[in-house]
Amino acid sequence: MFQKMLINGELVGSDSKINVLNPATEEVFAAVPKGTKDDINNAVSAAKNAFPAWAARPESERQGMVNQMADVIASNADMLARLMTQEQGKPLAEAMGEMAWAEGYLRHYATLSVSGRTIQDDDDFKIQMRRVPLGVVAGICPWNFPVLVPFWKIGPALISGNTIVVKPAPTTPVTILKILELCNEFIPAGVVNIVTDENDLGPLLTGHPDVAKVSFTGSTATGKKIMSSSSGSLKRVTLELGGNDPSIVMPDVNVPETAAQIYGGAFLNAGQVCLAVKRAYVHEDIYDDMCDELGKIADAAIVGDGLEQGVTMGPIQNKAQYELVKNLLESAKKDGKIVSGGVVENKSGYFIRPTIVRDVTDGDDIVDLEQFGPVLPVIKYTDLDDAVSRANNSDYGLGASVWSSDVDKAADVAVQIESGSVWVNQHINIGPHIPMAGFKSSGIGVEQSAEGLEEYTQVQVLNIAK
Ligand code: NAD
Image 1 (cartoon, protein in one colour):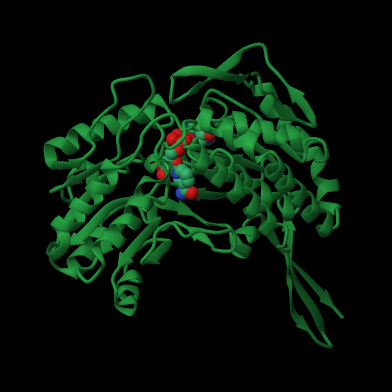
Image 2 (tube, helix red, strand yellow; image 1 turned 90 degrees about the horizontal axis):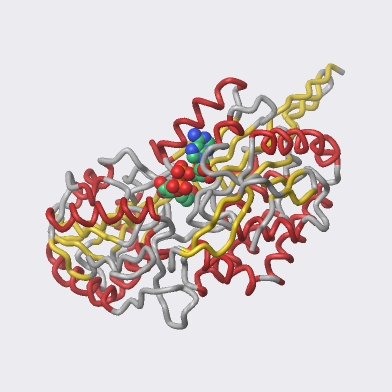
């Protein structure tokens, strides 16, 4: 399978190709073009040319086209989910879930409207605040949700009247290319473009003078580079970056129920979720029970090729991340005790069993660093205030959760945590109507919701003397 790029309404190939591996087999399952500097320039210039006509379209037409994209995903979901499992590794049910999520987000964006307001209207002045689109948006995406994240950018960019150039992660370009190929039947040329690379073209896009805004989802290290390269033309930037989400578990919880939910929040997509539970602080009274319960659930996981029936956890998406998680696992084995997992499967594919590590603490790598993989450290605490201060002792601040049978008490604790999303008795409840933001090194700006849509616009004040 060779899946082409979309530039100015044309499917574009290349002389040299990038092989895309299936992480469950380490075999090549598809190829995509190795995009060039010319491809980036052509895509930006196509988006720039398409911008005035697209911005001038009635909002209802833009909303209609976003809904048509949702239709494409819905009517091809089975085929797309199979592609996704092969390139990303997640089990088929999770891949279907990602398609449903992407469709649902697009349908919600299609109901949003960019609105201004009248600030003053009297005998002397009429002053109005308008929100106008920015121009060309660069949407730079990671490999953990290769369809959902691009549409988190395409949806609001298009609704607000911008055009976009998408750059998928080098290891997961296939499914999003396929969807955009299908959408090319109705998207006007240049409104949505996508260029594939070998991790080398991002800086050209974020430094391009004709790009007005960069919407980036990925690592904090890359986010910092993007801020710097965007400064030349003062581009607007939205950065959704890494996280090291803490869960604080109080002693009054129902242990088996809470363990099951924390496991779900930690091991979705083999832990490769920016908002996954990445460290669990558990009160000493229930610490042993909680470790045992988590261990039992992890023991029952069926790890394998996501296309196989019954598999509950797939491989790590790529070799670099696999090596990183393996290294963290080795240091966790020295610092603490493995309750379940800890095993790297001795077969092809980047498989690591879901791992629960106990008797680790702050200062250990597995607690302090973002593992972005299937290894959960469980940390004992005695004093609640101390747990909160340890939870906050991180450069990250993306998500967090607090667990207790006393919801009010948990909510009081939750608001003390320095993170953009704080859940009570749940983890990873996100949606297109809910703003998503990061504190500290977890990001800048907001995605999703009406607030996220505004980030794709520029405020303009029209001030009329009567
Ligand atoms: P990454 O930063 O390595 O890559 C992300 C994208 O940026 C890729 O498309 C890559 O090619 C591109 N890129 C790399 N260098 C660039 C540069 N100098 N300029 C412009 N673009 C560049 O991240 P990743 O490894 O793909 O993703 C994992 C990370 O993403 C984790 O830290 C995770 O927490 C984070 N993440 C965050 C969210 C969120 O919403 N906060 C969601 C998913 C992933």
